[in-house]
Amino acid sequence: MTKLIPLADLFGNPQRIEPAISPDGTQLAWIAPHGGVLNVWAAPVSGGDGDGVDWAAARVVTDDSDRGIRTFTWAHDGRHLLYLQDTGGNENWRLFDVDLVTKERRDLTPFDDVQARILATDRKFPDDVLVELNRDNPQLHDVYRLNLVTGELVREVQNPGFLAWVADASLEVRAAFAPHPDGGLDLMVRGSAAEDWKPLLSIPAEDSLTTSPVSFSADGGSLLALSSAGADTSRLVRLDLATGAAEVLAADPEADITDVRLHPDTLEPQIVTVLKDRSQYLVLDRSVAPDLEAIRALHPGDPFFLNGDDADATWLVGFTNDAGSVTYFSYDRPSRTGRRLFEARPELAQYRLASMEPFSFTARDGLVVHGYATFPADGRRSGLPAVLNVHGGPWARDVWGYHPEAQWLANRGYLCIQVNFRGSTGYGKAFVNAGDREWGGRMQDDLSDAVAFAVGQGWADPERVAIYGGSYGGYAALAGATFTPDLFCCAVDIVGPSNLKTLIETIPPYWAPMVSQFHRRVGNPDQDAAFLWSRSPLSAASSIRIPMLIAQGANDPRVKQAESEQIVAAMSAAGVEHEYLLFPDEGHGFAKPENRLRFYAAADRFLARHLGGRAEED
Image 1: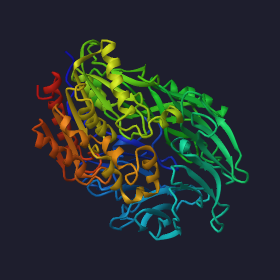
Image 2: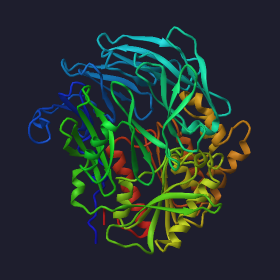
Image 3: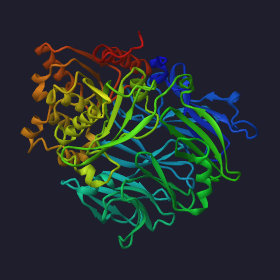
């Protein structure tokens, strides 16, 4: 029998993650626990033997004692580290920094009920950061220039109703997206900060989820973007700002381009990533072809590019692997050699992890749907208890690589099924648009058809299939329990909405510019109230007859606490077996390790009880 992996090794704090090298290449920073809370650490890059980092001189440089720091970046002065933090999961992010010379720490945006976002930094302006703040209007983010020397914030652009901003290499905001009521967008541009905005390109609603900016050119005369205009999949194009003409630089007919690596000085694209069953790479700059070849030889997983120094001599690269935790390398371009820095979770090496296998099937209406199956590592492949693990978004997708929930479920003896149902991104605009107004409809049918496929292959026991997910996946779990009550034997819902009308009516104020996307792709509460109610699990709560586990963060700004509590109340009134976990210090998901472990321990026991698998207490 496969050795049981402790929940703490899968869902507790990682040992180290997110390495980032300083602009001058002399320091490495990363996130690691300090006192049980994730903080930022730094150490000198010493060169010489080994991995080139003086780990003995490592020191923690931030002092978070609550939720932990999950992302940070170097300022281009090489002296300040910038990071965002909220309170209790409310997503009102504040921008903080730490001065590595003086050790001073500052709250750079000390405003209540305001959300800060980092828009841009640039090496030519090492003391400046462009920051977005919804300080004057909670629905709209204006752009401010932050001076890291003085801490002064000066508003540079007032938002007239735009959805997103793009700054050029001179840290001038010169492009933006203006939403249409029908879900489309206008790409707005201007020649300089002193000029008026003008529309450059109208993006139809069908292309809105498969179009996004990448970067201005170094001279500011063109804009790189990912766009599906004139094609099904999202291609890398160069838009001439004077004429609006688009030049296609890279494309794949089967899948969207998902990532672009740029030269740090010229801002020309070098490598693009196309995400299919696994990542594929297209080299646009032949000078880096030997680098990609050398990087791919370092590790069998799929590489992803993190950052590099200003000299473009050192690249930091991570590798995702289905049967092992993420591993990070430092790659030296002059010598074309790599040094292994660390694994995120080295403790997993002592366990037998499972492989993640791509599969596809044809849905009931003929659409081809892709997914991943993770079987128990002991070799069992038939008649298994199964968990349909539904991704959130829904405008996102599951990918190949290390997935802690897939490993947890497979280790407990379950088949983990992950499905990129219609509406998922990455497979072109026709596939993502096929999910419009299909919450609880054909999107849910794809999930049901995936179960039928797994059963038909002999993989899954039809009497022991659970549905599990968070956010949209939580909605799908509730929909599975209400709309197809005979298909699943139990369900787990994490921060999932139960009433689509109230979900859309209570979105965070700063989502207001993109509410037209919800109206187009889910429904408009003012016009489609009956339709939204028919697709809301709460409307069919009386159909629930399977045990349910529901978990909710009290401070969730996206899916309010009421979304969980109204379905819990309906189950209580009907006498349906259920367990409800409310986390008073969490939002849309569980940031604190003690809360994550509490949830997964409950889910571990719940699934073992209803699927016949193993749990950590066994």
